[in-house]
Length: 557
Image: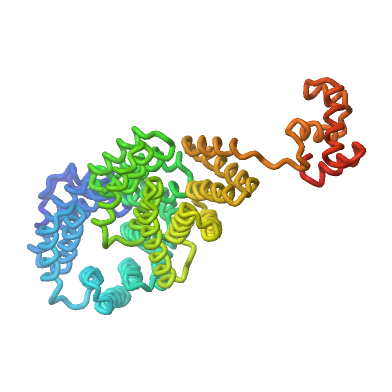
C-alpha cells in the first residue's frame, strides 16, 4: 500500500488526523481517518487508525485496519512492522476467543521476525514463549524467556517492553510458588507505570495485568493501592480509554469487599457500559459483583437477575447463586450446585476456590452436614498454610476465610475451646483487612459462642457491633437478625438494678433533685423515693453521694 496523490482537502484532513494521533486524541483521530478514502492511507496511517478504533472500543474495526496495515507492510517488505502487526492481530483475536485465527497470526509474526537482527519486536515473541512455558510448568524455560525479553528491551531502549518483561518474570515466580518474590517484582513494574515512564498503551496494560495478579494472589491491600493508582491514571486520560473499564472491574471488587457498596454499584454500572461492547467476560465480573451486593441487601429477585445475566455473559455465577438459593430457603439445591462447581473447578486455586469452599461450609452447616463442612474447612486451612509458606504472609483473604470456616465448624460441633480462639482470630483478620461484611458475620457466630459459654455481655457487644456494621452497609436481613438476637440477650445490670432504677440513679448522679427526677421520668416523687430506697439497699450504700460514686465507678453516668 502506498500513499497516492490526494487533493488539498484530503491532505489537510490527513495532516490533522496524524496530529490527533500524535496527541493521543483517539476519538478525533478516528473521526478524521474515517472520513478519508482508505487508498489515501499509508500502512502507518492504517496502524494508527487501528489504534484509534481500539481506544474507542471498536475492536472489530481495529482488526480490519490492523489487517490493512499488515498487508501494506508486507507489500513494502517491512518485516519488523509486519511482524509487530501480526502479533497484535494474534493478541486481539485471542482476546476475542478466536484461538485458531490467533494461532495463525502468531505463526506469521514468528516468520516475519525470525531472521531479523535483534529488534524490540522480538520481545513480543519472547513474552509468548514465557507464557507458554509457564502454562506447561516449565518454569526455568519460562523465566529464561522472560529475562530474554527484558534483556532485548533494555538493549533496544524500550521502557515499555522492559516493564512487561519484569512483569512476565513476576508471573513466573508467582506460578512457581515464590509469591513474595513475584509480588515484589510486580511492584517494580507497576511503579514504572505510576511514574509515567511508559506509553499510554503499556501503562494501561501493566496496570490491568498487575491488578489481576494481585487479586489472584488474594493480596487485597496491594490490589487496593494499585487500583487507586490505576484509576487516578484513568481519570487523567481522555474519555476514550479502553483500559478504564478493565481497571474499574478490579476497583469494583475492592470497593465491594471494603463495604463501599453504593460506590461499587455506580462503578459497576459504568464498567458494564464500557466493557460490554468488546469484553463481555470482564463485564460479567462486574455484573456478578452487583448480584453479590443485591443478595446481601436482601434484594433477592434483583440478585437472581444479575446472576442470570452473569451466566449469559460467560461467567459461572457461583458461589453467589448458591448463597442466594440458601437465602431463598433452598439449601439442598445450593449444596448440589456448590459440589458441582468445586468438582468442575478442581484446578482452580487462590481466591476463586477459597470462595467456593467458604460457601460450602456455610451451606453444609445450614443443612447440619457437619462432616462435609469440616472437610471443606480443612481444605481451606490447607490452602492457607500452603499460601503462607509460599508468600510469607498470614493476613490475606484466604487466611481470614479459613479461620472463619474453621471456627464456625468447631462451634457447630460444640467444641467451644477451639471455636472461640479461631473465631476471634478470624475477626482480627477481617478487621485488619478492612472487610466489614465478613467481620460482622464472624461477630454473629462469635456472639453465639459467647452465649454458649455464659458470656452474655460479650455476646451483646458482638451483636451490637454486627448490627451497626450491617446497617451502615445496607445489609437489611442481617441487620434485622442481629437486632432480634440482641433483644434476646439481657445485659447484666450492676448491682442487680432494674432498668428504671438505673435511669433514676443516672439522674441522681447528674445532680437532679427528686422533684426533677420525677418530672423527667414522668413519675411521682413518692415513686422516686421508693426507687432510691431500693437502690441504696441493693448497692449497700446510705447516701446519694455514695450512690453517685457507685454510678461513676460502674460506667452508669
